Length: 336
Ligand SMILES: [Ca+2]
Figure 1 (cartoon, rainbow, N blue to C red):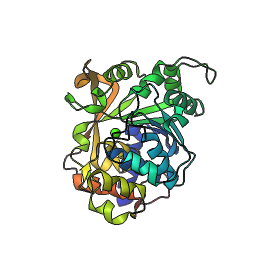
Figure 2: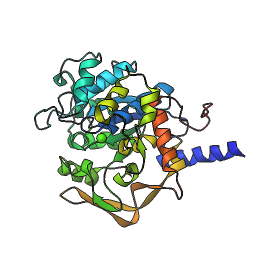
Figure 3: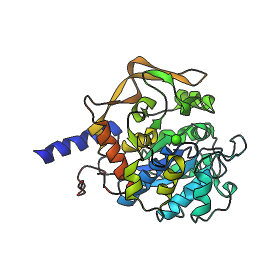
Figure 4: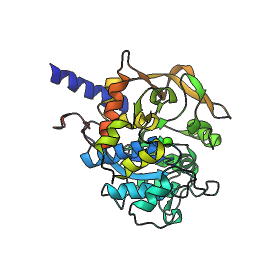
């Protein structure tokens, strides 16, 4: 009976996530890894899920104006054994600064191949290449930062790499977009309004497919990155170091990690979807949910009685790589 329940849970997970049964989802992560540490936790989850075969992480778009953000990202990927994972940077950011509590130190303390952010591929070019190389309707784009690079992709024209425009590539290759952004049913959230609300407006106006939003109000209630991470990761681990530098393991809201959790079977333990209507964004980047017909937009809601602490535990386990999340129906994987 318990197995039947798990099977039905997985089936529901696949249905709400729009995955093809049996396929390991190809994922592109788009992160503003700099000011907050939740991007580091999310990246660690992604790399562990990739190593476990739960997802197929194809590349990382770094949408940040921090000089060290992409180098920090490559240092973390290298530590996990993926030194060649494709990384793109958005070079139309207002000129680069360094303002993070951890990116510079991680980049300096941990080995990686690149020597400067200018060594990396342009973000929308990498987006185009990764999409071109993928089967139709196979890619999940997961954004946990602002939407400048995604907007550049959508606006891109046909080029030598593909006769398709960015919009056509998205229509053909992308199964869904999971977006940490916005507040629901209404409010103002940084990924939408800072620093580039125009891109948010453009992406939501022109995105041709399905979007699931993990709003600010979800991650706020899930506190991860505390004592468990301090105790379970070695001090020589870049994720341990980033959390130490950020707030010495005081714990932090899990905005970005709750979006990553949507890639795993555990999502249905905690979340449901509200999908009647659409997300409307104002020019200042604030947003509201307009109730109405189904539009392809949906936002996460907590299930009634959902255990926020259990959700945080799962996130910490996946950050630390101490648990395995299931990827699909029929998998022999089990949760330990
Ligand atoms: Ca972020």
